[in-house]
Length: 72
Image (cartoon, rainbow, N blue to C red; front, side):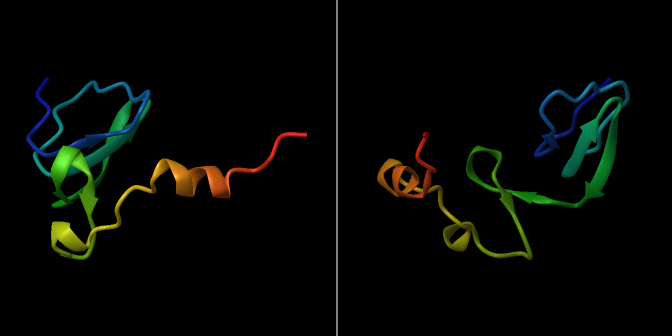
């Protein structure tokens, strides 16, 4: 079994077959859902051919704290 370069494998997926390069696969057993995907830094997916600089960035910890629901 071989997992190609620049693939994204879903969490908890059980890979039983080869996954070609530049693919998105997930499930149990894992199936290739999309091919020819583009990935950027740390495996982040780049959609619609947008350059990595314009890909959405992760929120800062302060921004996340503002959007988290309060526990009662």
